[in-house]
Amino acid sequence: MNRITAFVAASTTLLGALGASPAVAHPNLVAEAKKAGMPAQNCQYCHVSKVPTKSTYKPEDLNDRGKWMIAEKDKKQAKDVMAEWLKDYPGGKEQK
Image 1 (tube, rainbow, N blue to C red):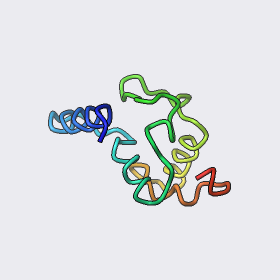
Image 2: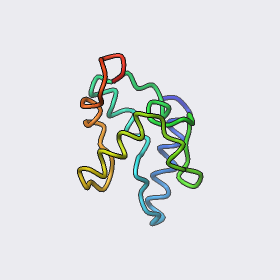
Image 3: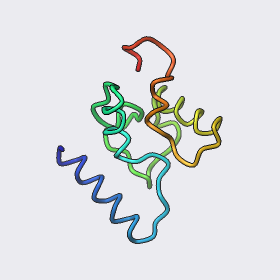
Image 4: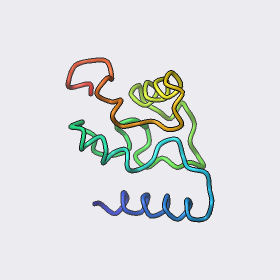
């Protein structure tokens, strides 16, 4: 696990322990996407920024895949986005 991913995961865990509300997306989504066979390498798989933060997040900071994931979350009336939805992302394998 690279240092940035470890830092983001540790920060998320700490914020959760302090009672902060969970973010819509979380660093584990990259790992979950990889397990599902997606070519995700970092947060830029769905975000414009390599290391997005909850405090600076804006919907326009998502790339097309991220915007699609939010649309799926709304369509499914889900609490959080799920990496398993990526298999349904439109386009060929190179777009997954």
